[in-house]
Length: 284
Image 1 (cartoon, rainbow, N blue to C red):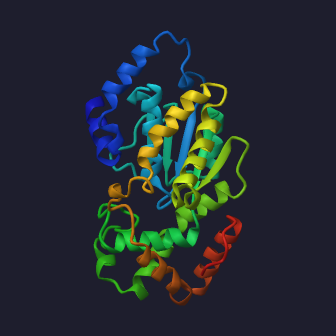
Image 2: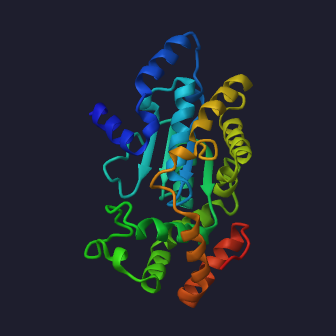
Image 3: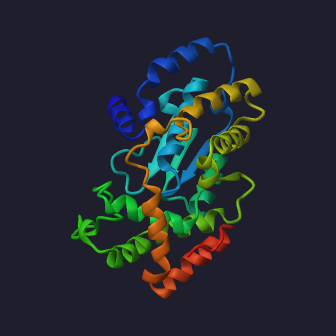
């Protein structure tokens, strides 16, 4: 069973492919350490659709491998599960699309983690989701291909498709805003725009993450080594790794320009309110 779960995670997290050998070697090197960081603290990464889900998972994998944490210490939770949710109570956990105030309360009661929340301009999340699913990515995603509508978006006009996607994104954008507009003491927020905008921004935001998670548990040198490993996931440094999870900038920009014309007035105002509450300028 463990081998099957490892295979499934490797499909969506390429960084898992070389996990076991490296983890074992690191554990052997550090076997004299009485307590590992994951034995002293829980670490939660939270993302929502189009806030950098695959990037967050890749970062967590790279950091864990650097520190010698075995695969069994990683948890991934998404609803629907798509057959890849596992290890809910693992010390390293990524929560995808389902983090709400209630979930945050539960996590704090049961695990007292340090949380890193990935956020993004809510309007850009809609534009990104539209471009992504319009070209047929994630055909099994039930949010955008519910029963009886599979493939509908592929043939829909932008006048039909964009309001549809904005409505389907309402659940996750609302959860993001309500949970992270005023972060708790257990939480820091990482803005996708800062993380991905430049190599310098990437280093700055990842360093914040590492310090938040591991300060007092690991040395500065260890965190620097983790940062160096994390840089392998920075597309500013490695543009050759850009894949189907990224959209052409031109598509997202054109979609944003059409939102104020195509979204129903009440839905448009909702997304404008979300932008304001998250500190983003009104762009729609």
